[in-house]
Length: 126
Image (cartoon, rainbow, N blue to C red; front, side):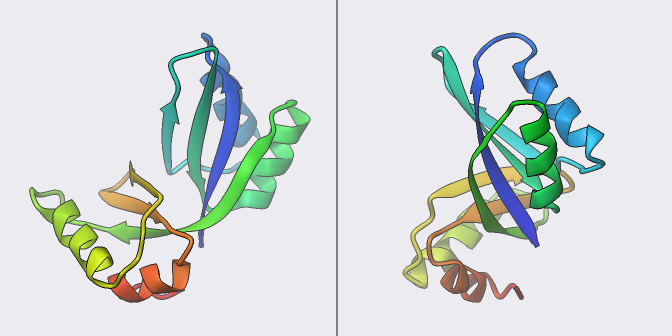
């Protein structure tokens, strides 16, 4: 299983380093990260295999996970059209995506309120 953790952070130098250190101190690998926000605050999304250990370590560092959820991670070939092909399958299944980002080792992360439908559309086991 893979989990997307959303963390509200201050948009300042060192904020990401603090999160990364807390996660690595827990022995958890960050498989992907994306951060959005140009103001005083930013929303950081990280992909981790062990949400509980990451959440606990962040809490010790006075950082809070604002949202946590299971996501679908798909291994892909790094070539033009792959994302279009995958998202077309998802759309044809009537599944609405609310999260997409790229992870290490040629993988794409998808989030949806309809996780079962998403898995079925992508033919991915739970």
